[in-house]
Length: 110
Figure (tube, rainbow, N blue to C red):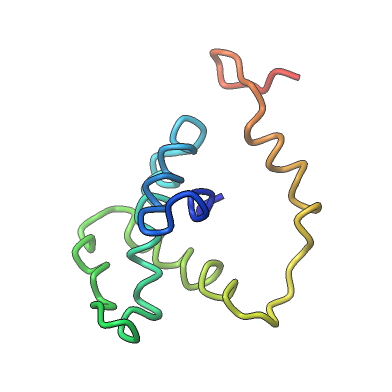
């Protein structure tokens, strides 16, 4: 979900994705999605002439460690072509539930 905006806008995909998921996620997850591009840069920006430590500008955020952990544990490993993961079909029910229409209390409407 955090890369949902990548095909539409690769240079600011995090902002696009954050705008899409904001109504349905916690503040922590919204912040993670909005900033994961900069945090992911920690792993490769030195190879393209950018500062891999740019994420340090956000060190004071209460979500800094949460986002850094997500990128290290889940996002970074996804770039490994040999990384074992479930097929996309496995995640379809989860995505459908996530984006299901909700009533005012936040409960999914079936």
